[in-house]
Structure formats: C-alpha cells, structure tokens
Length: 116
Length: 115
Image (cartoon, rainbow over all chains, first blue to last red; front, side, top):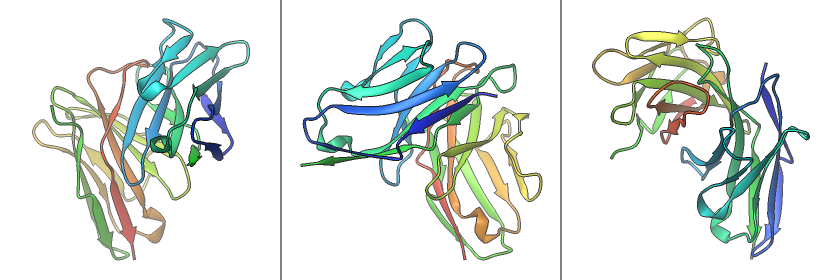
C-alpha cells in the first residue's frame, strides 16, 4: 500500500525565512505526488504535483518541491516566507490500479506558522 | 468557471438523524471523490464515483454511509443515524479524467456537527 509521512505537525518560521516542509513516501512503483494547501475553513488547493516529467516541480505562490527517489522524499520549499503562507499543508500520493488509481492518500498535515 | 460546490457548508444534526451532503463537480467533470477530515487529522478517502456508478468504496464505513452520483444532479453522501463520531469535515473533489497524475479539485467542504 502507498503512504506518505509528513515530518513535523507544526513548523514555525519568521517572515522572509526559508520554508521547508518534509514529506516522505512509500511506494513500490514510481508514485504521483501532490502538495495541497488548506486555509482555515476552506477546501484544499493544489500547490504542485510530480508526474515524473521533471524532478524539480514549481508550483504556485513561489513554492517548489524536488522528487528524490534515493531518499523517497518530496519536500516542499519556498525561499522566503510570507505572512499569507500561514496554513496547513498536505502531501498526498495517488493510488494505483484501475479503481484506486485516482484515490489520494494524504499525510497528516503540517501546520505552518509565519511570525512577523 | 465555477469550482466544486458543496452544500450545506455547515450542518448540525442530533444523534440518530440523517445527514445529506451534496456535491456539484466542476463543469465537465464526471469523476467525484469524497474524503473525510476528522479533527486534527488528515483527509481520508471514502468513495470514488463516476456518473451512476460507484467505482471504489473501500474507504466507506460498512454501515450507515452511502453515496450516489446520479445521471442528473449532484453527488450525495448520506449518513443515516448519525453518531457523535461522525462529526467531521467532509470534502468532495472532482476530476476531468481518472488516473494517478490527474488533479483533483476540492470543494469548500461540509462541516458536520452531531450533537
């Protein structure tokens, strides 16, 4: 079964500092990986996704993530945090097979706090 | 182009009542997914439907929960005889086609509170 693990349920950074949110996956075949952001009382918005086209994926709002097969990781980064980045971030992996191919399996989430 | 719509946004039910959650996918999308987010937890897959068909319900509790996506109208997630443990945010997502790399677009969710 596929799974993702997000290291650190809470991350706090200062405005302007580097943001690093960690995600490790477990999959027997090359996975499709996603990062979503959730603002309070809202749905999830896609930040970026890895589909094997390129290992470094650029997303919206200045975020990017690098797929590292050797480390089974897909960490999310942003060079300079902004107050508006404060939200919960979820890493997810899509399923395999004809029926489960579209099912997303989510990590537990990382709450990002940005301090002024 | 309207996104995924869910209603109601908030729903309060007493134990034993029924809850009906509605989801209208993005225009042109025929694949719908339901996820549940319990307090302080991530989202958990419940069910995947195409028009008039349940494709994967492996994440759905065996009792009291059902889902449908009729030929016309929104997808419905129905919870019978609700219990306090059903209190959660229920999210619907839709996609244009099925498959691993396809993006799922999420609605704002329905927050169910069972008293």
